[in-house]
Picture (cartoon, rainbow, N blue to C red):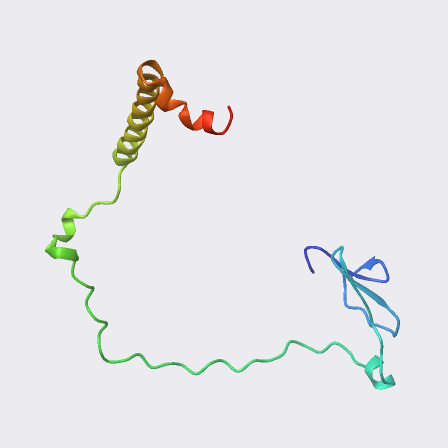
Length: 127
């Protein structure tokens, strides 16, 4: 079955059902199609068993071994490369906090000692 439902003339499909010309098929909530039969033989179509498929041919493994992994960059020993740790994220967060505090201290300093320079752009736009 389908997740959104398949309907024939408003009734949800739960088993196989033969279609007749003029049946209204619904797929989910938004898609509806009218079934039209072109020949009487089409109405005689019955559901068949599962289609048999031919298995793909087996691929023989090659005799050559896979290439070795590439060396580490700049001759760094493989055991020296570590995954990122929680400590590095904490350090990045502290660095961002220091940057924000520095910007606030700069704005406070400019407001206290050089307000004409700090507020000049606002005066240009009429604030």
